[in-house]
Length: 315
Image 1 (cartoon, rainbow, N blue to C red):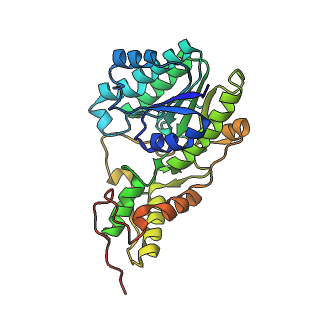
Image 2 (image 1 turned 180 degrees about the vertical axis):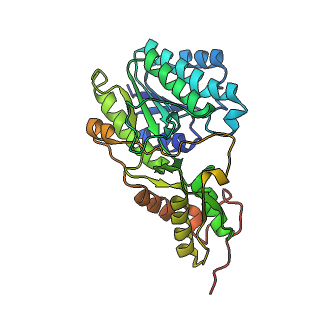
Image 3 (image 1 turned 90 degrees about the vertical axis):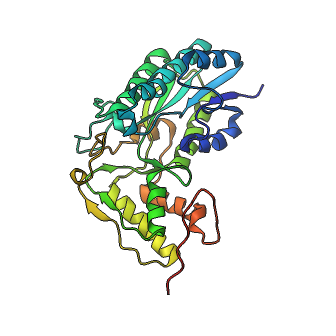
C-alpha cells in the first residue's frame, strides 16, 4: 500500500514546494483553506477522521502576517495554535508522526550568539506567541513529533521580502531597509527538500524515539535585512544592466512597525545536521540559486505574478 501523507497549506511558500518534494515518498493528500478551514476545528476534525491509512501529517500552514496578527489575535491563534494542537491530537490518535513548522520569532532577539533549540522562548508579539503556543501543544499532544523552526523564509512566488526588493529594483526605487535586525534568509525550496530527506528517514524507521523533538532548519550563516536587500539589488542590476543605488540603511527605530521584531534571531543548525545529516547552504548561495531560476529575472518572461513592467535596458 502506498504511503499516504497529509499536507496542509499546499499553496503557501513552503507548502507549494513540499507538494513537489514529498511526492516521491507516497500519495500526498494536499489541502489549503479552500479544502478545509483550519479555523473551524469541528470541520477540521471531521475531515481528518474521513481520511484513512495516513502515515504522516506535515503542517506548514500558518498565519504569518506578523503586523496584522496584532489586530487579529483570535485568527492567528486559531491557525497557529488551535489547529496545530488538533492535528497533533489526531495524529497521535492514529499513532503516526507529525512534522510541524515554527519560527525564529519565538525568541526575543536579545542573545548575541546563535539560538539553540533549548534556549528559552520569549515572543515579542502575537505571531510569535501563537507559534510558540502551537509548539507547546504539538509537543504535548503527540510525542512522535518534529518541530522545524524556520527563519526569514522567502521564494520566487507569493509575497515575501525577496520579491518586494526585486519589484523595487525593477521600478528603480531605492528603499530604506533596517540594518540592525539579524537572521538567516532561507529559501523555501531548501526547506522543502530538507523536509523530504527528514521525512524519508522517519518513515523508514518510525519507531526510533531518539529523533523526535525540535530542530532549527535555516541557512548556516546570518545577515541583516539591509545586506540581504543589497544583495538582491546587486543581482537585479547585473541581470538588467541597471545602475540602481543600493538600499539605504536605517535603524529599526526609524521604521516603526505594529509588531516588534527580534533584533537577532540567527538559529544554530547543528542539531538537525547531526541527527538527520541535513545542512542547508549559506544565505548567499541560496539567494544565487533563487535568482538564477526566478522567472522575473528573464526579460522575456511576462509572468502574471509580477505586475510591474520591466525597465528598458540602459546603455
